[in-house]
View 1 (cartoon, rainbow, N blue to C red):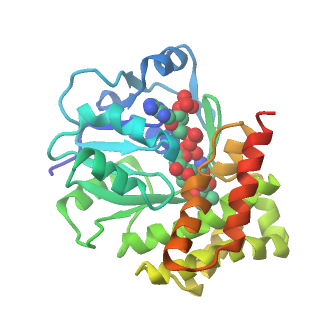
View 2: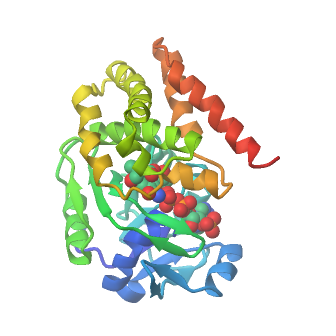
Amino acid sequence: MGKIQKVVLVGLGAIGASYGSKLQTLLGQNFKVILNQERLVRYQNTEFKVNGTRQQFNYILPEIDSDPADLVIIATKNAELNQAIEHVKSHIGPSTIILSLLNGISSEEEIYDATGSDHILYSMCVGIDALRDDFSVRYTSIGKICYGEKDKSVSEDVLAVEQLFTEAGIPYEISEDIWHTIWAKFMFNVGINQTSAVLKAPYGYFQQIPALHEWMESAMYEVVAISKKAGVHLTEEDVKHYRPIIQKLSPDGQTSMLQDILANRKTEVEHFAGKVCELGRKYNIPTPVNNQLFKMIHIVEKMAKV
Ligand SMILES: NC(=O)C1=CN([C@@H]2O[C@H](COP(=O)(O)OP(=O)(O)OC[C@H]3O[C@@H](n4cnc5c(N)ncnc54)[C@H](OP(=O)(O)O)[C@@H]3O)[C@@H](O)[C@H]2O)C=CC1
Ligand SMILES: CC(C)(CO)C(=O)C(=O)O
């Protein structure tokens, strides 16, 4: 892969719009956002703002016939991933790099199953406190995108993405062991996203209330136990690594799962507690905290519909 010139994004939400606005500024017409017909009507008639600045995104329909993109970025929620893959498929050629910014530990495998692509870089973003309110996205910290090859090689694809992110001003880190990094992030989401969603607690409460912090970490330690059986070997150090990161987040900021609850959207609980409980059963490891969180979040989702 030479220089990345054409980028396609699917998922213009909190994450997609935050990083996408930087790519839009760098690439102009060579940065496209895929929307299906129903979304196109909604988005075309509305101003889209990131941190208060109007964005002129170039929207295209999934079925538009075009040359493959150099890079496809997927930034939907997990529940929308299958549909998003269908929407971008016609933009994926034999050398198109694919980057999935979704939380959880399964999106890259799902993308591989659906596309058979050999150019999927494993990735995730951290430290970003983006908030979405319909067509307005705001963040105080853009965090960084961590990515890499699952086999830890520094491939041409890795270097091409590095050049793009540098030119676009997107903070990034080429992870030495991206699979470990993704699992560590998964552990963090299992803790903070789920407890924040149940208590409707923005980050400020996690910064100030030790008992809440402890409850969050009790959910994370269940992931640590499972990771050892799964060959990833998270440790207490991985849990502690997130403590200063929480302190730096905006006190009013909300996890993506809390944002989903407040906006009456389906959450990603199946990909967090759901996955932990599934792996706990597989490896015979008790997961009482996540069992409760799984039930509670489903109840909270149902309460929104009553
Ligand atoms: N928000 C955050 O701070 C963080 C989120 N994450 C992770 O990043 C991922 C994305 O989260 P987030 O940005 O918060 O999610 P959002 O819900 O804000 O954004 C998802 C976007 O995808 C769009 N979308 C869904 N399906 C399609 C489709 N088929 N075609 C085109 N667009 C589609 C949605 O459009 P519409 O609204 O029109 O339905 C929405 O704009 C999640 O896995 C989350 O866990 C990771 C780190 C931080
Ligand atoms: C790490 C955190 C909590 C914010 O970047 C996140 O991944 C999310 O909100 O889903």
